Structure formats: structure tokens, C-alpha cells
Image (cartoon, rainbow, N blue to C red; front, side, top):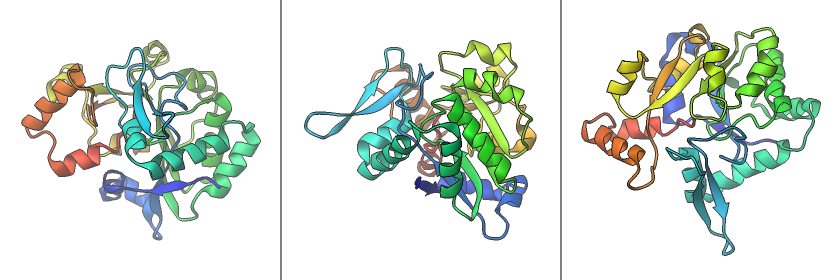
Length: 264
């Protein structure tokens, strides 16, 4: 069985939104299903990072050749053994299955009280079959809301745009991948990591602090921004921007914890 994670402070805040609270009646809860960062992200580029196991058994972070800001989830996998093991377990179970077997595994593993599911706080859709498996699971579970960020845009464009739109299956294209050109080409709703509130304002984008923009079906056509977060390489532009945001009070300790849930 797959290991679903319960909501942390950030995703739990979705319950405070009136629209999203409708999915949480009858004591239903918020969950996520996560995979190993980087390894399950075939089209990541600017945020590509992996937790690499060394010969001594310890893990270290490895950034990609074109990484501009480090994936927070990969940093988690280096720091916490239980997090690494859980995500590896899920990825290992899914990675070699065919579509129908993926559907059955996800559906049978889905908590019975799931009201909202974020697909991939860590990881991404690693194949077209895998993305469509989640679509099929959403079709089977109309009372549950499923949402995800993805850089696997060719799977979305190649398959999901040809499928009937499901109200309870909300996708957001995440800038920073190898197929960014598809966002404008196919008019995909998107999220962009920004280094300041001013940058978001210049782009004309609202900042999503609590995942409500990403999750709400009524906002499925509206693009938005995400503030840079997590642990960034020393001396990088991302690290400098993060220090400036903290200095301005954009990140209180509480808000930092909540924002760290993002994994785009």
C-alpha cells in the first residue's frame, strides 16, 4: 500500500476557506501523496535537486546543472530518514506499474476519509500513464478534491487536455521546467516562483501563501506566484532573496513553516 501523509500546518489552512471546506464535511481530512524529489521529476530544470545516498549510507543534496533555486522537498529527504524512506517506498511501488495497476494501487491506498488530496508535495508525474491514473482515481472519487503542481507539461498537453475536465482534479503548470514554452503555447494555468513581492506585482500575479489558489476549482484558470522558500545554496540569488524577504518580515517563523510546504 502507498503511504499518504496527513496535512501539516500549511495544507490544513485550506480548511479555513469556505469553498474548500465543503470537501471536508463529515470529518474528512487533507492528505498528500509524495514521491522522491528529482527522481520522479523528468522535466524539472531550475529547481532540480535530489537526495543522493553516499557510500557511507548518509544522504547529501545534489543540484542539477541548471538549478537556480533548490527544491525544499529534496532538502527534507536529506534531513529526515523517515521522509526519505516513505517517499522512496511510494516511488518504488509505482514506477514500474502499468496504468490499470497504478489506478488500483492508488485507489485502494487512498484514505477513506480523504476530502482533499495534494498530489505531490514532493515529486511529480513521472509518466503519462501515472498522470492519467490519478485522473481516473479522481473520476472514481467525485467527493474528493485532488490538486497538483507539475512540470510534466507534455503529459498534460498530450493527454489531459483531450480528456473531459473534472471539477475535482485541478492542475497547475509550474514554471522552471524544460517545457515552459508549453505554458503560453497551450494557455495553461501556472505558478511562478518569485524572489520578492515586487516581482509578483510587476508580473501582475497574486501570491499564494496557503495553497488555496492552487486547490480551488473556481480559480483553475487563474495563474499566481509563490515566494521563494526553503533552504537555498549559500551565495545564490535565491539565498540572497530569501534573506531579504525574512529581513522585511515577509516570513515570520510561523509563515516560514507554512510556506515550506510548497514544492513546485
